[in-house]
Image (cartoon, rainbow, N blue to C red; front, side, top):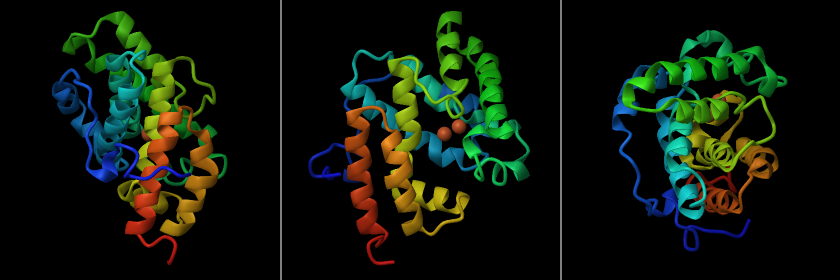
Length: 214
Ligand SMILES: [Fe+2]
Ligand SMILES: [Fe+2]
């Protein structure tokens, strides 16, 4: 990992994505309540921002499908039993737990409920739900938009906010969680752009949170 915020345009360096995007504020408002569960009102805005950085580097990807899918991907947690989210959802073979599968299916349901009223056509909704369905439990990516959503879903965890929330979910200290990021999350990144963003973000988080010291 040799990228830093001096060489990579990313959140930690105060940069914004350079593309211009359709305003999704009505969609944000439509799912405000579902986003209030499990820290998704922190995770999701950061991951949407990372998706836009990835879209800057991948003009071949459909921005509306990518941004809508990452915005909605975890809304299904709001329909899962809160007490099971942190037991079954983050322990053992957490990626394959029933509650993980349920949050994907409920996320697809929420997408089908809110998107038609916001002017989305059926084909776009299908492309969005195809990504939400299996975003955690299916290991392979089916399209470039799917890949960018998978990368954006992971990238926020390299930020101080991501380390703060996720280290608690996994019952680790921030420096223990940093090892998980480097050994498990980083190798799962699909695009080179995501690896550059993750490296630069983590380098800054290591500085800010003193992860080489405590
Ligand atoms: Fe998820
Ligand atoms: Fe997520």
